[in-house]
Length: 186
Image (cartoon, rainbow, N blue to C red):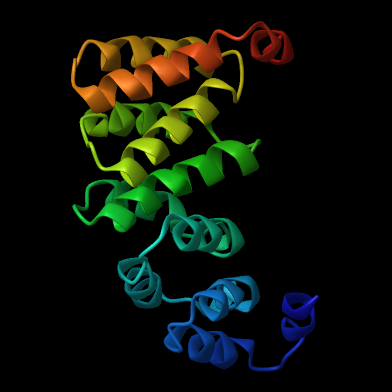
């Protein structure tokens, strides 16, 4: 696997920076796989995030790299307030990364994320609303404490009565009421 081999390079930060600068989609994805999290600055994170132009680039960078950075939770909240479609998506994708991968992390972060989810459920842009929905569903599936909080959040979102909010809420409620999910949580 190319990424595994390139991670052994002595200056993989320079290599990742060069790959990213190429603006070739696959090279940018590879950059996120080999970049050294210890060398990523906040400025670099902001620059890369502002260059997102597709959902898969956003989601892969969040999964491959950003979730390993010490400041990614504050960035999740910060980016969720931004207006650019893929920057905002990044905020919610980082919320998903925390919810799914940091099982020992505090549920207080997820409660805070639910507030942002509710506040941004109006956004009609496809890649934002899908990320908002994704974060809501993942929080609801994290544990028995968060499940009813996510359901209540979805019910409040439904009452916003915008097309995006209705879609987000109905989709999340359908999944979170699934008996298999409830059984797994128990």
